[in-house]
Amino acid sequence: MRKKIVAGNWKMNTLPAEGVELARGVAAGRGEVNSDVTLIVCPPFTHLAGVIESLNGANVEVGAQDCATEAKGAYTGEVSAAMIAALGCKYVILGHSERRQYYGECSETLNKKMEQAYANNLTPIYCVGENLEEREAERHFEVCKQQLEEVVFNLTDAQFKNLVIAYEPVWAIGTGKTATAEQAQEIHAYIREVLRSKFGAAAEECPILYGGSCKPSNAGEIFAKADVDGGLIGGAALKADDFLAIGKSFE
Ligand code: PGA
Image 1 (tube, protein in one colour):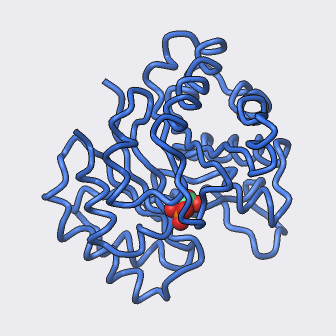
Image 2 (cartoon, rainbow, N blue to C red):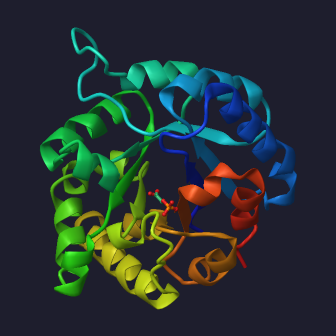
Image 3 (cartoon, helix red, strand yellow):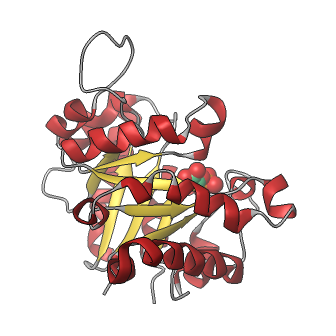
């Protein structure tokens, strides 16, 4: 059985005290979500310590939204994987389309970040997905394959066992336009096939999350698909009730 995961990507939202409130709300409702569903919140760096403290004992995991390419040193403004791991983070989102698009993150950068994540026992949530132009040109399979080949294919078998993939079509992120459950299943199955070509049977165990305008009203239908193992949630993760409702959407 693959792990079921609902991860909240808070992006650059909430002030630290608001983040702690949101985390407390998630913790308060954790018991309503099946215990076989892993809930992860990914607040901004500045909130991590407070959020982790407030979640003490709540069975809600914490991830960061990014980490540095280097281990330490003269890299003004950067936050290392070791720093976030030391706080108690277990996960780190890498390769989110907003990082690729606005901060020029390329596979070379992401390979270094993945290396840092694994060196510090963090599980990467590695994001792939095509933009609207690529989808319209029917290049979405090719784009996702390349994003996997250039980064995930460099992992060892042991590292691959500790990886979460998030498929997030850029045209669905924050737009209110969701991929249909059929579109999600089609590409998730394809992603798994690409992973199988490199890592064999271990690909069956790799959680592949859907992201992009996922909300309580559509999560159930999407999560019911065979190769969809949960979601990476942006906007709807900013309300504890919505986030928890998504956590309850598995069949
Ligand atoms: P959204 O964002 O749910 O607001 O579309 C998802 C994401 O970017 O992770």
